Image 1 (cartoon, rainbow, N blue to C red):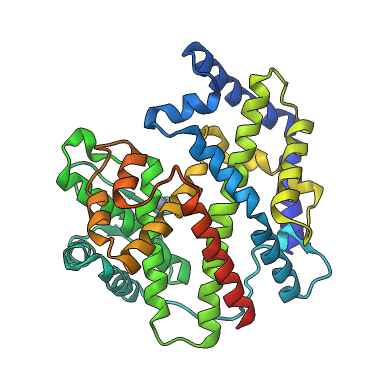
Image 2: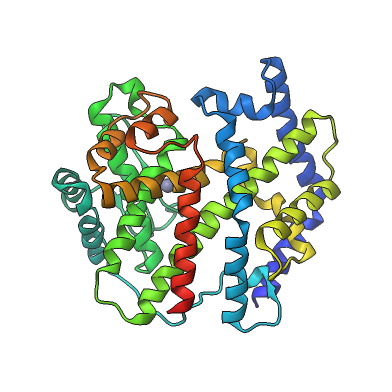
Length: 384
Ligand SMILES: [Zn+2]
């Protein structure tokens, strides 16, 4: 069933590869035109300039991840062994490694857990969130006729930081509430402390506050009474979060950089060329344990984020920054600096604000620390 779903979706994209390649190529040409007409040396420099992100943050991320790909390869090898399959395929990547774990929560339980989980951020933070969730009616929580899917935190300068979600009671929904609450508290604090023009935080910073709260939730859940399988389920979730938010998005970022560089050298982007680049990236990232089927080569055609140029790398830098800040708050008394960061909106450029909070994204240390954490989780999962 998994294989046929995988093949069905990718074959459908393959049917339209010429059109989809033309569309993506148009996007890249647009970026190149903007770059040249404004005299930037390259597309990436033009894209990162508005927020003063040094290109070395982008290229350094790719380089640091490449150097540590054996960590991902090892996880793939262990996954293959755990699933007892002769060949591990793309469609085997989402199979849970711990089966039949029943972790479900009513909305009220989830609310309570989210509020409890933010205790390390201090009473003031916790009370503000508690007030918003329990009394302030921040959350449009359940599915409804014609309601849109997904989850968002949104509002304006003088409104509440509303959350839209579709709560169904499973583990992922609990994490979604924790995640969106992180965004909302970031907005609340920045709106309270900044004038309107500096109250909005850029995407480079946004996912830091939300991912940070996910880590707090994992920490909090780890303290509950859990069965061995539930505990392993949580570790596997964390491993998968890092795989998909960090490794996978860095692979996307590399693809994006490559196709822009080719366009800068006047190399025409053809479906064949894009598929070759994408195939090789998958081989490099996943390693020998995964059989990289040729159908995955077309996956670039179904990633909408490639139409927001040089966007995806921020998922990888965001989770790295969040992890380092989280460690600093939990282990080194970094709470005050972090709370100040949440109140800073866009009053300085993102790298500067993160530096003041205690993490230097110009160094590759945060990336290395996240991969160390990934290694640790993988070892923990497969030895216990
Ligand atoms: Zn988010």
